Length: 289
Image (cartoon, rainbow, N blue to C red; front, side, top):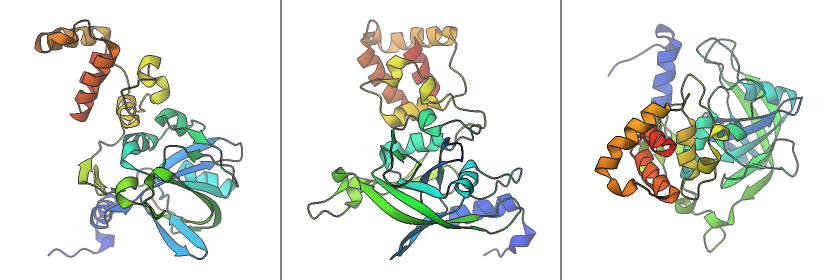
């Protein structure tokens, strides 16, 4: 067994050990607004519930190790002490991942990730319509744990109203663990699904993903492609060229001759198969051709 003094290793290395060892961790998809009313949405896995009476949840937007800057979520709750903590299910994990992209201030991650804004009853920040459970919270306190990169900021949030999708309830009105199908964060690119165990989601690009709002309308409004599918398609920095798409379709037409003259529904189903194999660029080429 190796023994390590935290002071003897770089913060980034320590960060990796902590996140890989303390897992799986639940995810708070936090929606906030700033003083100008601009909406922000971002996921955090430094998160849990700590009290039922009063109902208290705590999550922590840490200072970035790289550059020692703060996140918009932290800046927002210091201005407007309210937050919605949205619970993440497997059906929305790709969109959630896309929302973690560090877009510029003022960019609405609801729009970029393709989530639905639903007005809250008691607070200003909107809820994520796709989330199986949504907690409207007042921020009681923000506790800074340090001023260097990697330092956390504990946001102590008191639940003032919760919203539960009836589809996740069992016959007794309790939340069914199978139906809610939550996901949790592991180390690196790994997640854990409550139903089936570990799976991998590539981290969003360092360059900005184009976002669901930039997808062609026929793709964005597809009756076949799911929110997760759209999230994967939207996490590219640019689309393949027309030449690349034409070359791809020429090759795939030989292997799958039935695609020649196929309907958009059939094309979308084939693209969905490619996405399940994590062949995002190939799916794009097919859709564009």
